[in-house]
Amino acid sequence: IEDTQAFRWTVFNSFLLSYGFAFASLGMLYFLPRQKAEAQERKKTWPRHPIYGYITIVMLSIALIYSLTVNFMSMRPSTMCMEFAGGDGCDLAPVTPPMLGNSSNASNASARLLLL
Image (cartoon, rainbow, N blue to C red; front, side, top):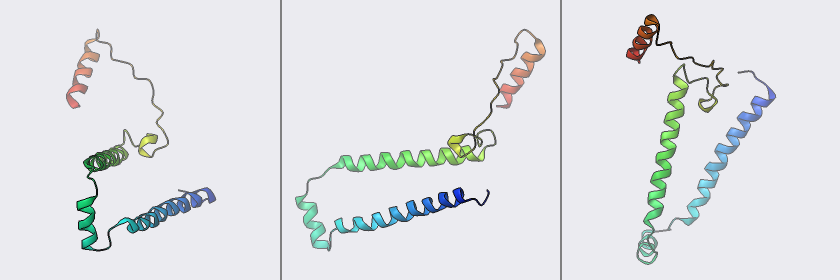
């Protein structure tokens, strides 16, 4: 990684985004009940919406699966070059299937399948 002005701006923007979300979450404290009595009153009088809980669980599950996928892809040499995993992009040559008529190619193909 080169120490360039563009990279410094990238780091600045990432810190700005991180601290922005932290301060935005502090702003949500306003919506919490002040004391136990107010929390119990809200529980009795406000309508219940269980769909919000389901949506939260689904969103968190998707985020976990996405982060695990990207992390595992960035660890494997065969996929770490993909832009999706943080690489620069892979220059993949077209794959040609082995000739099945030739016995040596067929045995090589079956040996490769056994290794997978």
